[in-house]
Length: 592
Image (cartoon, rainbow, N blue to C red; front, side, top):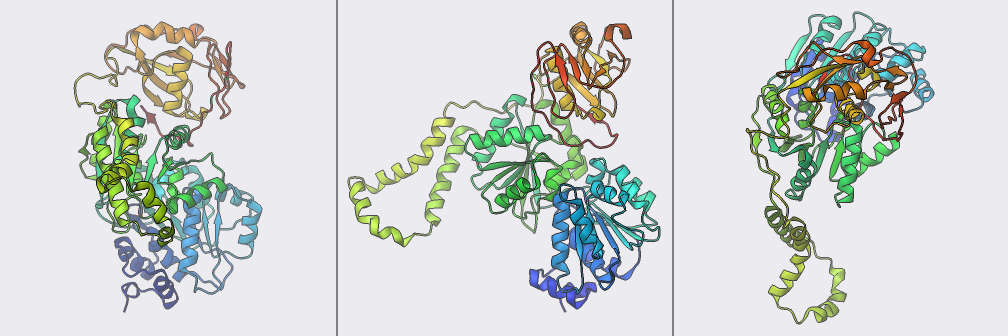
């Protein structure tokens, strides 16, 4: 009797499992499948990314539905179209011996009429992203009034992406007596709210320790000045010649920029973010899976669909805004029993986040030094030696050997080795021989630490204006012409935000924003009573100084910034700059 047969699965599913080469169920499958097969219950399953959660809910759903009926009986909600397509593909593989089974993927970026047509033919299981699902329910293209099972996959990520209202609306169209199965890598309070609101006495299953990272992943951090972040990334790639990695950035703009710089510097890299078309994303992922791309630079949202098991490194080029997201990132490596490394490149101002993450994942980070040039040269040299040693000889070269030998006959064996290896060694040596030390000592004073004497400002722009903290910081700097370290403690809310500058910049900031508009709404700025840091002098200015008022239209003022998301900045000197960012998360607060 196979290990999967002991879980209570039927023969047609066991045959599919055998075809796929699965031998032993993972821990989450072993704990979850028997419960879902034996009971009609709600369940909350907490397990890290890459632990086999799709099979944990997929097999029980396939065994419980009636494939002879054309009624939709199962609904699976997932955060991204990549993950939606991945789950659909896996369910079809699991159920290939289930006669009459029809699993349909519903997601944005594809024809809604085609998806509706497939559902109309009879779809026992629908796998959907919340946005498209809500749209199709509203158009009466989908009927989920008779579903028996609903899965919320990657629930924490869906809530981070701001899908709470969509999920609430979707579930309001489903029967109250259905079984709801919630799967999540972490259990923030928002997921607990979902569980309490939509589930009845759910059974909780935890694989490992709640909210911890994978035991197969080690965690490292590298402390550098913010301006040296990209140089540190290149050195980490060079010191690991066999690297096969995902590099995480916070925004689409940074993702594209870093990928372009890596490509320009000769690395096999590509960007994966929400501005790419579905066809572009498919091509990038195909190249990544076949290792034509060795460094995939991605946003957190786009990376939800990455289903590659042998990733060696996850590199946090920038830490995520939400600390819990780090668990998802590091879960991209250390899969299928293999070990992996999660690296973090941080500046001094971000060190506190390392401690916060350690508390969540229940593991300590190891501080490591960014390698110097000679260390990289040595590693690359021996990597080449092993590559030569392990290369299979192409016998077709025999015909050319006499002429090759004739060209090289004047050299000894030692001289030939030197020449062959100098080709690779010289490239790295010439690049790194004068390279500076990128490492920064912890403690002491540093450029990353904000000034002690500061003023706290209120501004009537926020995430409803499609501005995350980094976008808002850049906007403030461009309008005020302040330096990169002069604007700090930027906290973005839905319709307003706060930020700090030195007290000495108060008049400059208030003067710079006079008459400036964003989307034809006058920017309202004032010194807040809420202080951050010590000092923060300066008296509160009246609205006549700021030019208050609200309206609709472009972004006008003395500044020089444009925005391709719909907010336009018009003034005496106009230019456009390409900026983009991932969708915000509901009304949750962002802080920097």
